[in-house]
Image (cartoon, rainbow, N blue to C red; front, top):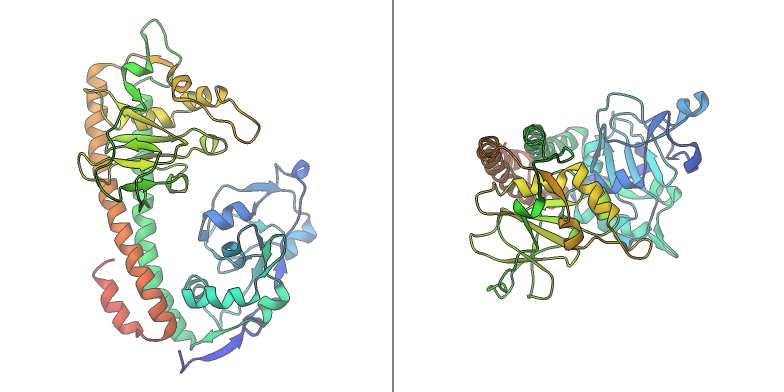
Amino acid sequence: MSEWGRVQIGDLLAEPLRNGVSYPSKLRGSGIPMVNMGEAFAFDVIKDQKCELVPLTEREQERFLLEEGDLLFVRQSLVYSGAGRCVLVGSGTGPRTWESHLIRARLDKRAADPRFLYYYFRSPQGRSNMETIVTQVAAAGIRGSDLKKLEIPHPSLSQQQGISNVLWALDGKIALNDHIATISEQLLQFKFSELELSNEPDDRGIAITELVEFNPKRTKPMNEEPVYVDMAALQTSRAGIPKWTLRSPKSGSRFMNGDTLLARITPCLENGKTGYVNFMEDGEVGLGSTEFIVMRSRPGVPSELSYFLARDSRFREHATRNMVGTSGRQRVSAADAANYFVNRPDPDALATFGREAAAAFTHMKSAQGENRALTALRDVLLPQLMSGRLRVKDAEKIVEDHV
């Protein structure tokens, strides 16, 4: 990096930095999708994610529409590490705007590759640099005037593009694996619906506990530092649990491979946080949040069925209706969640579903393992590329065997 020049962000802008629009809740619900703080923290690249709609005026549309390649910086955050977070605006199918707690940077692409700045601010060097302008009062934040003056490394445009292409290739492979897994799970959701377990039960109705056990008894973990899954590790629309940690055994839910983890507390239950465990050794016992309900299919029932039952909208509505507690801290008990009835599935249809689900989940597990390896590789290459210690040509050779 010593050979690279340094410039202020303001020197790379095609337009001045700009905060987004502000619309009260009562005016939202129709119009143009607005990227807000939720999307900025949930996604690294903004594409066509579902956003709140706001009625931009014609004049606002002239100044407040996003373009592919724009960068969004979080202006305020309740946590220090969130202030100055940078996300990239990717391709989209329609107009999008952004809210006032985000700062938009539109770069002159003749001088800077937006992906380079996006990756720079994801690197340890970039984060450390950003923290030089973070202020902390009631909340952590950055000012546009300080962001404009922030100095960053400025290699040649071809170098920026080479670095970005290497890292983008890894992220592209990760995204492709995620997309395939998403499609696979959607197809299985359709297969699950054919079992008619989502329908109101008729005279064939049975208790869900004939198919699934709630909070099954588990022995204490044998490992000194067993697997631990916290609430943040569960996804809102996918089965995989991409991250976990190891820690000393304490109280919490206990689970094994083949178990489903269902968030039982607001707002995590309403948001859909659910995961399927298949990443541990056979017989290994892991620990999780005390706010999980563990669901395990009965013997003879496909293990994946517990996951799709937990995702089923009718079941989730039942669980939500049975939440108790003070506002903001409501939760459903395992006993109340289990007090639920479904149609008895056809044995042959259930067996067919089980075979298809097992094959798909095996593939998704493999893809998730590959993504962990790709993510680790990217995170190793990122600081080396941003420091100039690793040449682009050498990085390309490393990456070409993985994508």
